Image (cartoon, rainbow, N blue to C red; front, side):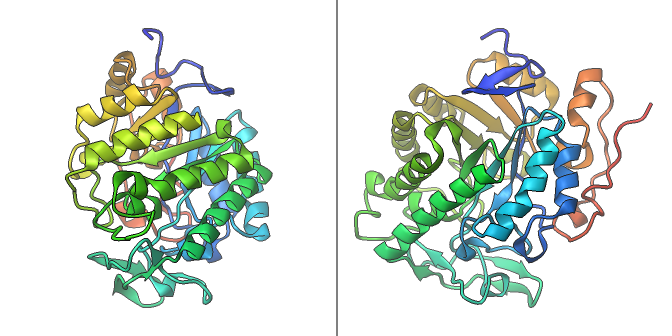
Length: 362
């Protein structure tokens, strides 16, 4: 594994990547009416020097559109609109996966279509507030606990969204099982208080996630699927619980049996969250034989060191891609990284702070 350089070409399953750099999924809230658009196509094309791009969280269901202006991929109109983005990335040799993100209890009715509802494993209200364009900041509501019929319907939505992703030209999908959204809500006994086969024991709490992976695999093939996990993450009101290690050990063992492409481990400690212990990363690596992607505030030097350690196969970069659209070229040539980053425009509509960051000029 000593030849794993950050800038070296590699394979992800049968997919040829031009380097081991992944652009992390980052919500940017530019999808007006939840439909991908030309501005988004420009944003992704600018950053297609990455070996793999994983899109912003994209809902497989009207119920999963918890935030303002996030895209979906459940309708024909949305699927058709994504084609301009996949075409733009492929036109310069990039590869792109769509991240399927159902926000579950993290949402508000003001951000949803009129016929959609906030759903979750259990009727457990998260702490905190969420932004709505219509009403400003609002407390999170109490979500509706999902019935068995709701669960099966949601899994079918994931399956349909996976099929739509392939139709739209994506090279694969990433299931968002991190950051306190629907899939992780099932994993945690804090948000999952069910007393049926989807709650209680570790095996039961992992059941919905594993069934959803299987539904997507049946729709498009296991060789097109990855999953993002965030053990020890606290985003979206997900406090720690005693069974974290055992939960993710069991989950990674079961995912390994499904032989999907990768597990993407998110570590948000660079932004002030608790660090993901090295022990749980190693435990996942020992149990999962596919590729491992790590994200977590990496520099080029730290990424190279991580790759040489043998724990990881690809490194994902997030914020560095926001104000460095030519990040890969800067790494290749040793050019300095841009220092200005306008956090006020992370989630605002329009091109400012989105597609207007310049490439490096000497």
